[in-house]
Image 1 (spheres, rainbow, N blue to C red):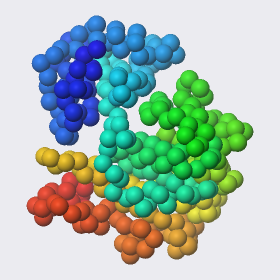
Image 2 (cartoon, rainbow, N blue to C red):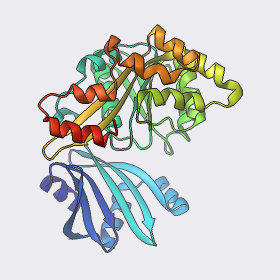
Image 3 (cartoon, one colour):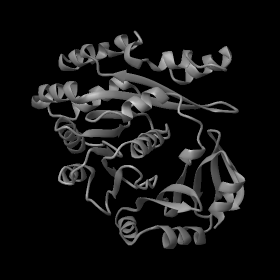
Length: 333
């Protein structure tokens, strides 16, 4: 298939954009580039016939868009297919092979988090910031070190993880379970030790995740927030006004750690920037009392592996001051 040729020819490519009758566009080192090849209708027919399940085809017919994931050779690809002005279009995200990636710069944090046996862990960041990669790294680390039952809820399943020391069940929303919230509630009857939630996107999912964490499970979840302190507010505001105090009490007790990450691409490298929040007694008190705006000040003290995004930027080595200034401007810090 043409997609496999493009992947082999463009090693640093992260995305492929297809629009019926127009040139193929790829994202490489953060920049979009047009290719000579055209995206004709036969390419979309091949995507539909080879890689979309019957339920996803039906979803596309009803909504005009759908998400799925598939493998081309050894490469895993996330697919979003949609329509634009009546034309077929698709966005394909190339998921990096975890074994080929450089080591995570926060190995100690990853290992400490993977050793947790209960509570809530949040991985935050905008789209394309590597949340799925970090979540999969955590699951893979647990899978190779601990004999436990891991249930993942994903839409779609991005990285396929085989059971090693752990027992791993991956459930896809829309195929194996109707929704994230129902999947969490189902999983509580499946004797899980760890529940991984691909996206905590609504109040029902957030509430179910907090309940699961409160009842002694380790819950790993992702949020589309850019800063660690913002994730606390996002969880709290998912509850209605009269339940805010309950939410603060639950979160202050169950939260273990939050990482908020962003990717910054230079001409040569992709840099992972990550701020880390650890739920110490002081942080827990701020959450309970509704003073989360004070959390960044505590993070700046650097205790318990905590740091802000700005501190992460200043902690980078092998980067020029000019590039660092560009990075800080990019992050609006």
